[in-house]
Structures are given as structure tokens and as C-alpha cells.
Image (tube, rainbow, N blue to C red; front, side, top):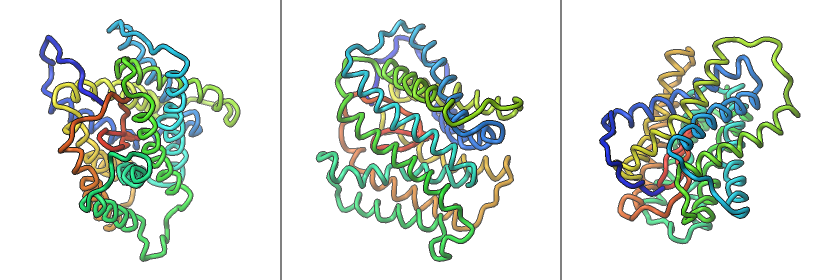
Length: 327
């Protein structure tokens, strides 16, 4: 993503405060998903998340009087981006957390730059790896095997849930490569592109959810609040925070939020959900993050790529090359 034009007024909060808030929101997203699935089906959690996220972004677009993208081609690319960066990975993480702890989901999310690096070998010629980046890729996947306890034969691990979480992170990487190749240089603001993308993902889930779920017999307050927070904060407000941080300090510094997300997700899961943590989980997570950092070393010495749609991260970080992601 490219920095926006400087604002004529100074932000009310220092960028470090907003950076910290962004890391907290995206880190807690995995906890919100876990709690949300206690009262709703995974598709319902995802639909609610996207619906509330769209509401926040639509309000921001209206306040800024931003214009929506134009042209069937742009909207077609946005629909694919919505599937790869929102509808699919959000749903996969929700299904994954039915059987795996939120701590493991948060760590799986941190593998996105590793997938992005692997895919860049064939998809993005400008990202041909250096020796350092190739080493980072190998180190990162060693970290994944450490987290999963490969030497124990993955005993006690839900293979399906873990595979779904890793597939969600892979989807983020594919989505970011797709966005960089198809939506750069559209002349439309990041906010408008992102709001349109999340809105399209909401429509996609609006079609899918009724086909695979039934209306809950009762609404439990805590899962409902978790879904609202996941959407309004994790998918809507966090994206607005990201815009401000990128505009002020640039995409390279802003992308560092990715390395705090699994730490916060792990701390939240252990402290608030009483999830069990064995030694290999934090050790493997550190190795994953070290490998991910090495795969991004070249990016810090290059100019930022043309405008792309920002996506938290996962996630969140979801972390695609040169951009932060979230769950």
C-alpha cells in the first residue's frame, strides 16, 4: 500500500499509540473468533464480522466523501480479492478454532509471509529471493514444524483444524499477490477499495451462510459482543488505524505490527481462555517470526509498491509481503 497524502492536521494520538492499539485489536481477533463460535456457526461469525466491518468502513467513506471504484473490471477483481482476503480466510479461521486453540490459530496466521515468499518465486519476478530471504523461508517452516511438534508425530494436534488455519494464511498470501497484480494504479483510494472489498465479501457470505447454517435458537451475549468487536474493531476500525499509521510512518514500519499479533494472541488465549501452552509453541512461534522477518529484508531497502488494498492479519497478517495482515 502506498502512504496517503499528509493530513493538514496532526493526529490526536501519537502513531506509536495507534500502532499498539492496532496490534492489540488484531491480536485479540483470534480470541473473539473463539468466543464467537461458542454461540454461532463459523459462517455466521464470519458474516457478522464482515457486516459490522462494512458498516464502519462505509461510515468512514461517507464522512470523507470518497468515491467508490468504477468499472466492471475493477469490481470483478475486487470480488476475487474479497474471496481470497476476507470471505475464505475468515471462514477458515472460524472453522479451525472449533477444534484448535486461539493461540495456535494466531501463530498459523504468522506464516502468511512465508507462503507469500514461496509463491513469489513463481508469481512475482521482482521478488526473486536473495540467500537471506531463502534462508528465512526455510527457518520459518522449521518454526512451523516446531509449533506443531513434528518430532512427536503431531500427537494431540487436531490435523484438520490446523490445516484449515494454515490454508487461511495461504489464502491471504495468494490474495495479496492477486491484488498487487490486478488492483495497482486504479486511481481509487485505499479506503474506497478496502470498503468495497469488504462489502463484496459480506454479500458473498450473505449468500453462503443461509445455505449451511440455521438461525440460532437463542442469542448469547458474550458471543454476540465478540462478533461485534471482531467486525467493528478488528475488520473496520483497525483498518482505519492502519491507514493513519501507514500515512505517517510508511508501510515498512507499519507492517511490523505483524510480529506482535501472535504474541498478543497467545497471551490472550492463555490468560483469558485458559488455553494450555507447551514449550514448543512459543519457541516455534519465535522461530516462525524470525524466518518471516528474514523473508522481508529486501522490502526494507526498496520503495513501496503501487497502491494495494490494505488488509488486516489476520490479519491479520495476515502478513503478505510488504503489508500487514490479521485474522
